[in-house]
Amino acid sequence: MRIEDKLGKTRFKVREESHIRLAPGVPERRRAEKLCLACPAGLYSLDGDGRLLFSHLGCLECGTCRLLGWNRELEAWDYPVCDFGVQYRNS
Ligand code: SF4
Image 1 (spheres, rainbow, N blue to C red):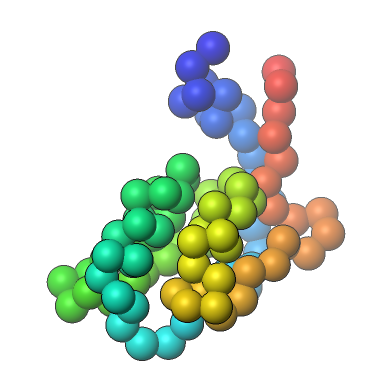
Image 2 (cartoon, rainbow, N blue to C red):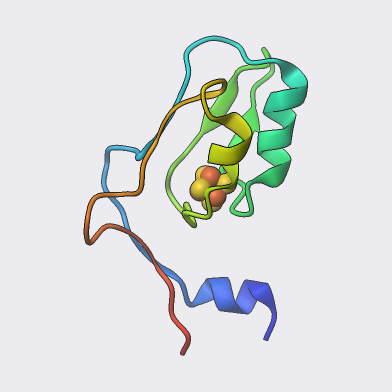
């Protein structure tokens, strides 16, 4: 089974409030680009002014961005509150 097929079975129970918050300001471009490339769900992007954009909708809770951006580009990274977030399915 391809990863796209597996992810197609994944469900999300989303809260309006994001469990990940970006730090204010314009990040260093190379570091911001790393976040854009590393997120497997493609939730980070850069606008024309180099500002980092983020949407928590579709977050796989893998923690990659926490490892790359903790205390720099990210000011908060928590798991969603109980019963919210990604729900992986095997079938
Ligand atoms: S935890 Fe993983 S899927 Fe969620 S925003 Fe970070 S890198 Fe992307």
